[in-house]
Amino acid sequence: MRRLDDANQSYVPAGIIGDMEREFGVRITYNKAWRVKEKELRFLHGTPEESFQKLPSYCHMLTEKNPGTIAHIELDSNNRFLYFFLAFGPSVRDFREYMRPIICVDGSYLKGQYKGTLLVAALKDVVDDSNQLVFMLDRKKSIKRAITRLFPLSHHSTCIWHIEKNLIARYSSSNVIFLFKRATLAYRVSEFDQFMTQIRTIRPSMASYLERAGISTWSQAHFVGNQYNVMTNNITESLNSVLRRHKSFPIISLIENITSLIKRWFYERKSASTKCSTTVTPKIDDELRKSFDAGATLPVRNLDELVFEIGIATELCTTDLINNTCSCREFQMRQIPCSHASRAACAKEKLLYDLCSPYYTT
Ligand SMILES: [Zn+2]
Image (cartoon, helix red, strand yellow):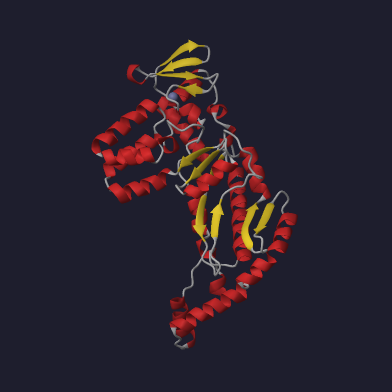
């Protein structure tokens, strides 16, 4: 039971058979080991039916104890369970106030007796529709349809990791996949076009596939809205992977595990942020250092009080510190100074931290 209760470790019937033999010298069949496991799991987590029955009172308790938390159960006309939605108060508040307005959505199938789908997502009551809002999706049409209906102003992007996986399966040509990656990350349309032309020359079918996938959803240069360099759905993939052992649990045990996971993440993030020595996160601090180094030796020429021409003939960029833009487009798209903006900031003795979006502060 102790081993079964450890949600981070799997305990399969073969393991039970081995332990029984080692600890008690008793040989049991696979079937018996499987039944023992099922019985003990029910003892630990209750039956799926009991769990569904307790859900309304559990929801009530959850919202009472965690201010701002939204828990909603949807039933069908026969009073049977359809959906359950949960958003934690602190998650909602922090998303509205401090986070880049990007929501990664991903679904994974539950493995309990009654199946179901776990969607890591957000609902209309929690997040307001806006043309600043971006949804990062895999290519499932049903999710996309629902989001288009609920958030008509929002923009959609496709996880480039999912596209890459499909490309590997279809074309298994590493040099063209390398070109695809360069194309996704290009900030300028001209730069993007160069990579696409090369892909089309080497693999015309792959270029057509990428066009059909919707260029504006996977290319930064063509994306309408601001993605802040969030190009993959990794966050939801990791959440799904952390929860993979809980997917066969009755609904309340599943929710309890999600709750404790989110609480732990909040605690870990908070402790990490108190140890930061600068106003921005360590990752951004590191990127600023790289931009600073890359820009340090670039020639700089004043065009106006806060407008500069940076670089040499072939790679000449115009950086504007009034509107925080650069002709390389990296500065306005990422809202972190590019090498040119770093150089301009140095020339004006401005702090690089002040040129970063508040989203990157600790
Ligand atoms: Zn630039």
